Image (cartoon, rainbow, N blue to C red; front, side, top):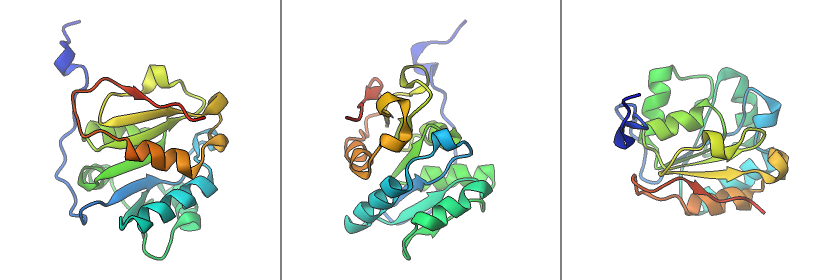
Length: 173
């Protein structure tokens, strides 16, 4: 159909929002329950990221704001429900990394080349995962409730800055 391999994944262009070095975005909620990361795993992830000296920005739609509030620490920035699509793209582009379940934000993060971890639950990783700089996890038995904070942090640690690597599949135990 006329698509050469370098054009396989077109990338979005967005002027990055100004965040401190090492700022990480997390999507705490999701529109569909089956695509929500466990609150306990997200909370543990946030605490670990902050212990590393990282600032955490919580993203999502308006319906996800409550989930963000429930996991946020006093130092998190909550932007869920406050950004237009162009502001969301700029936010994602300005982050050092992004972690979410398989949602639209995870795909947009890839589009602006933000290193990210995307956890696939009921949807198959082999069908929807992108390549680097995205690390894709398949939740055990397709059930996101089985994903832990350690799984998320380990996957985030393995995010590659290389833009030319093939897709990475790091299944959780």
